[in-house]
Length: 224
Image (tube, rainbow, N blue to C red; front, side, top):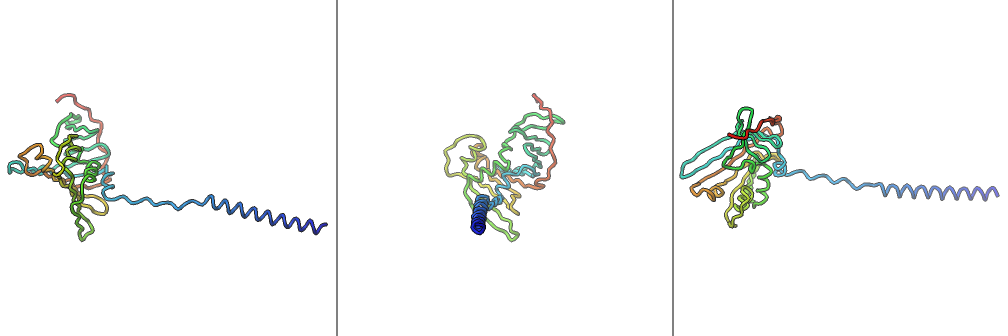
């Protein structure tokens, strides 16, 4: 009888261990996690779209009736605030003129908010690649042709029936960042002012991510 009991105990032990191994094996299968998917790195255009802290130089070249004028502006952007030449204050889609410690609403010829990276990114995506040039230092230049009707819709909210006319947007790309961008807005200006020959806008970016917090506590003047 003791031998029978011993044999029975051994059988129970074997069944017990088989059960334990089965449970552990099942547990390992259910807790195994799939390998983490690595996030795709951003493209230069996506980095540009998300750029909200930078200094810039805005240059505008205009030619009307064979008379050329050139204007250059230095600016800083920090988040939703942009200050240009310590003269213009841009916030919440309103352009102000800085007057001492106060600001007043003003009008400028071109909506400067439309020249911010996020909006120019949207315009580029509406265009077609015109050319791409790679340089020896691994930088590159890309040119896109954007339908004029899309630019006017974006800038002015107006619809026009002109499927063929385009404007060119080209940019310089270095180390996966856009360092400068140029817009040939001649056709855009000609749509409103027939005597326009040339209207070019160039923006050069620097000090990206290192701009100090800009002043925001201006008092708004209600009259000029």
